[in-house]
Image (cartoon, rainbow, N blue to C red; front, top):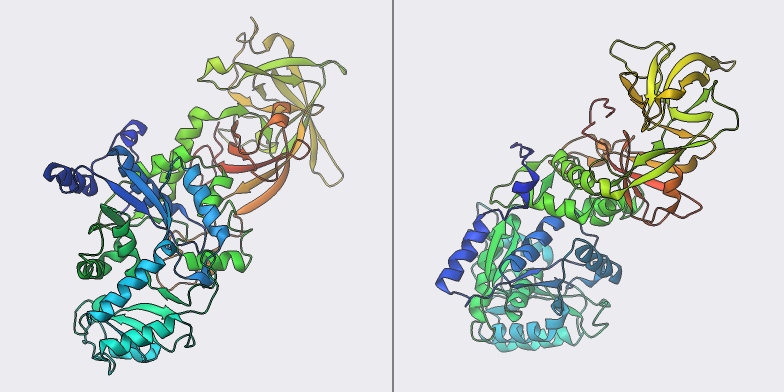
Length: 571
């Protein structure tokens, strides 16, 4: 499989990248095909939450419209009410807005066109371009043929137009049960393209619709609805993923039959969908993960849903950068998860304030520090942003450090703390470990150190001595308890969504760990969705829903560098 994880600069990613869709639009503008008008649309089905693959389409459709001074419509394809809900509509609107895009007055629903769609269906019947079918679904499938064998005509294909029209009107009136009849377009049962073998364009469904109520009991199929909705909205370039390439002849056929009844004939253009490693993009599989409670809902930070990656800590800027970086092509390929993670690191490296957190606390006692003394140390809010100022980090006799920053029997090349070794406490003093305190089981409960009072950071004597190790710390008295949620990739398999494999068997049992740690006092005032770099531990976000002044909850968005498959502790 082609690896597209090659790193490119953020400046290059931010530049307007040339691609085949831009070439088409540029050619159209030169020929004045659309008289300089560019209208695109993003048409999700409100039957689930959007995922990172949809973000590529959102950025493409809204981005192209913005770049060419056009408009992009948000249109909900709400033609299957048994699977749709207002919850999904609201979530999709929230996702698009969060990504930084606006649709203004251009919010539409396919159900807006139900009357017109029905009117056009009657017209097709009257023109002998459609007929009412009464074969069962299994019989229709049998008559359709295969990829290597042509289909055969239904015995009802030549039903008189007047008879089909009468039946269709009675279908609308609710006279028949679900499945009794369907309406099919009359095209070509011998076509090499199975989509053109008299496709079903209407079916009976006695079900309440979230917008039209019980007004309708017949609903149009997607392939029939989509092209007409595009045309009625005067869309110029209908951008969709490659799986719809074989549907384009049907898209064009429907509009060709209605050439005098719709305002334009948009151009359908297909591009490669996003295939991202260590994720599933199938809406069916995402629903299974949620309904089987294998994750904690649609916004679980381990999911590829936009609600999930938002709660994980991803930023709209990182997602837009990712969309630019992976580009647009006609060839399917796999994008490595590290490309997405690197985009977030690049954004948060610039935008996230620095803070200290101790994830696995180990008590340290400074034996020669006065018992009741406290003093302030000062740490920059961002090392590359001096205008952000500094914050106060209190220092006292008893501290917390990370367990990983102490090793009783150090290995070669270990420059952090060990018996007899010296390190600098970041923003504070040089200290030396002098003894280890253990419990009855032989477990380390605390370490004892001595500090050099002449080596405080920021003072004249700070550089009087040099040491190799530099570790972070918190004053035990001032440290704030926090719930730290360490999220990792949901799947161990880089391709859980491919082939016939059981994707549930590839779930990563260590994808979520909840630990009790400590954070510095400055984080008490953190707002939900505020992001920080916890020094040497990664980038974290205050949880969108669970963070309160009385309960500090932080989710790890991403480590400081790629640590998948190997132990890495960034310094």
